[in-house]
Image 1 (cartoon, one colour):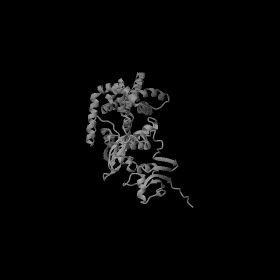
Image 2 (cartoon, rainbow, N blue to C red; image 1 turned 180 degrees about the horizontal axis):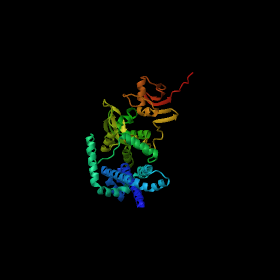
Image 3 (cartoon, one colour; image 1 turned 60 degrees about the horizontal axis):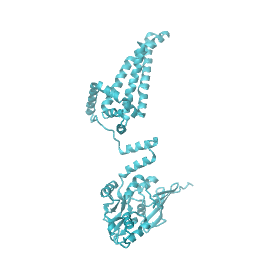
Image 4 (cartoon, rainbow, N blue to C red; image 1 turned 60 degrees about the vertical axis):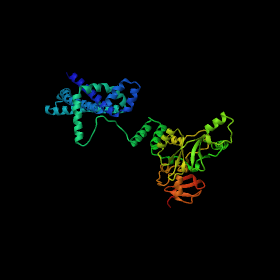
Length: 437
């Protein structure tokens, strides 16, 4: 009889471990991962999906199981262990009234220890680390137990909803765990630290979050750097320009850059020129001019990308608030916001926007955004009128010229190169700390 009770105690602790592991694994497992396993044909995943889609019901089942087992262990454990320890205390001639207290305390501590450690803490830790495997293992037994105990779990759930509503909360039984953008960033960071994703994957996903906050003028090619052709130019002029600039597409103007009427793709021109030698170099480029879209410079880049995809175009003209040309934007400019700089075989002389020369010493392209400079240097430049570091320098000194230095906080910004009144590069160094005398 004693052996039977001891075996029953062990089984009860094991059953408690089962329900504890089930509870934590259900909360921890990712629905997307179970969906993936179903798509791969995993038969156990279908049962797991059924369980996690009715989470409240099955959590009630696990909690009911844990509660009932704890009550039975308390009822069965102390008397069983007392039978073991009483003879030992009798041999030690412990008074009967004291031996009852001693056996109760010893039995309580032993049952509590094994129940907490083996029946709760250990399965909890395992379930947290192996949530997917545990859910697949426990799904079918949980479904069976849920059907068996349905009247009790249904009553408990309805009572719970009544109490939560009385307290002013409205909790539905079917819910999905969602994460805010900041929570997803934290999850990504933790995944990077644990090695689940690599640095490139982390960078791409973070860039996608930033992508939604960017507007077109922040990544455009400014008007001063746009290379154009005029509609009156000849094919010979276009070929000479392409040999020098090595671009695939060129905006076409009708007079000046404020009146861009289309875009020419050099592939079309050269394909016809190679296939039909009779095409004269002195012919006008007019037949090769394709339409180009015009949008305000403050449009979000995800909006302009959608417009480009709809109109099957790779380039758009950005207009300022007065209707003049602010610059152009290409599909490559947009993609680089996600994947980083894209260079082809003609970009060998292209330099990065940010060059690190040494410790606290950088050469910045004047087009680098102020917010990126703030992140890089951990400073707080603030100016709502301009977006780039070159523009900010011009606001600090109206007669800015090459070699001028603008100090800000712990850094000095020196104009490294200019073209007319346009800042090209900025040399940034940290101020030298003067040792106290």
